[in-house]
Length: 186
Image (cartoon, rainbow, N blue to C red):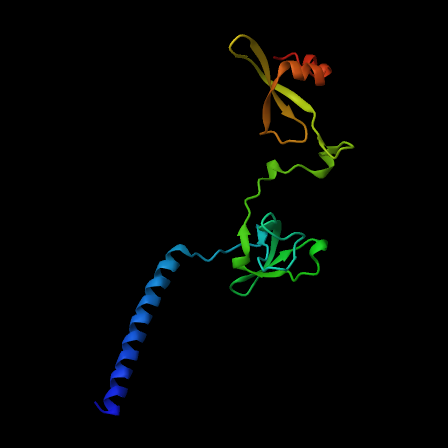
């Protein structure tokens, strides 16, 4: 076997490996493209910003397993090119550029009815949120093994209209005696 034959066989072998590698890459690309979709945001949409996962970099307050994966929501101000968006960042993040690739953004479905204004929230000395009952929506009696417990369905003040809880009537009488008897509808 001459040196030219070795070169020819090696060249053929390399071409065969390259063609098989190209076939495998295109197959994997087609598999990945089935799951991939380019997100598009409109101006005014609310998005979450992905926190950088780089080790040793503290960009957004904390790092580690318990650190946030996303921060926000932020409003999209403009589209920059085909794949980037400019966000309306608060003053505390002014040291960070405001343009991000779409892969760093996550669509945020904001329910405005669930947002509680900061003015409505009251905090006590122990930094606990103070909630006050607004209205009693319903009453029922829960039967346990050997006794009956009266329950009231209560809507609370800093929460929005869709949130309510069932509370024992005796606890409500102890903590909010003036409220429980004020509502005579039920």
